[in-house]
Length: 50
Length: 552
Image 1 (tube, rainbow over the protein chains, first blue to last red):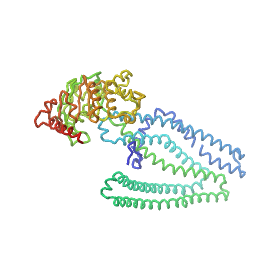
Image 2 (image 1 turned 30 degrees about the horizontal axis):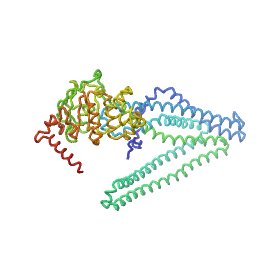
Image 3 (image 1 turned 135 degrees about the horizontal axis):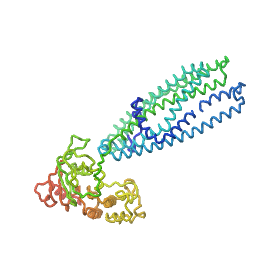
Image 4 (image 1 turned 135 degrees about the vertical axis):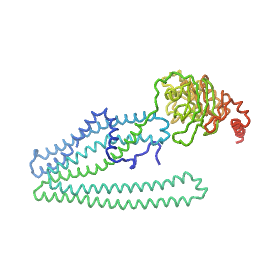
């Protein structure tokens, strides 16, 4: 039974990877725009780490 | 950095067997390896820290945006959704997105670089062995992934069957009185046994596949690795490859295999993140309550008029709750709504608070249509004391101040005094700073009522709604609460919803509501005296109940 304080994410909550769905995901990424500088630097570190 | 490690490690082995490189000393190469690990650890630290900074801050912004949107959404939105589902948006879905920002994205980036850079590097250094590896290992890894997914599905099925069996236990224990009174023990035991048999059947099937999977991993996957090493060893023995290169190759292959397997998990994570973003955006794109500019005034006079109001809830369009209802109250008047449960009394209040739009007809407040009132300006002028008061889990001070955030301590104490709340607040060692517990559970019903009255006094509304405010209290508390309510009602338009007709004797006018319509109207005396009247009938019923009660 679902808990009142929030439901866990199930397998059925998955969505297919397609252009339309990726646009939705990137829609959320707009919240990271104010923090783009640390994000880009983080990606650079990620690249060099690999 | 990570990809240079196998290469240098190979060179360390070659240096041991006397092969030349830019550094020939074993210790020197070991230092290079340690240097690589050191630089890699620094990069990893900053990568984790920077991504955490971005994800924590952006998730805070998403949560605030979601919460801000949620609390501003119209009531119709909440009617159609469960609370648990909405809390999930802010908890589970945002956490999923946070993982995507901080872990999944970095991992995806890293695995792709490892995969492609690793393969390119291997093709450049050991093309024949790489080709041999690429036609064996990735195929086996993909088969293992598909097989693994199938087994996970079977495990999930086992869990579902077990959950279904647990429901039997839960139901039985919750209804143990019914089970025993119907002598249903044997039936329930059989039901549970049958459910568990299904669990065993599915679990054994899953175990069979799991066993086959482990055998496959041991034989095929490790067999594949052995085949690659064997082919490498033949190249070493033929002098086409050094031992160090073979070691490098094996390490690179391990990295590449890990990346392929990791990408499978990342694929699932991204799919979940898309689902989460879809649900979060769904709320962020919802339309909030309409704000109407220019309708905010400091204080309403308090005239209320319902004019031929028709209404049905959006979730139940087939059921008309109000059916041409007309009532009115002049500023400062006290009116009461009487009638059975489901007559439409609470709906009248919800419409007055503009929780829903009127179907047809109109509600006029100070002569202006409710459609032209800004919801916030309107609600600022309405105070409410409900039957069941739910307080916030802070202090008494915080709860009273909820009505007026900039109220001074003097104003708070005066409101508490007028609400007859000061007498019990003063008895608490912490006074106004006493914590009321979750939903105000540490206070009694009467104490919570008086906090709600103090809150309403502090709000100083033009219109006051009393929703069966004293119906659940004992006689002594009721008298204290009633006295506080009498003070609160002075000079305000008051609408009282009461089942207990004794509490509405003094009001200016009583509207008797039935099936969403006013069927009778007048004061207590005139309605009680009406032969065959609905109100007179209710009074008689209540009188009978009141006389019966002491006997009960």
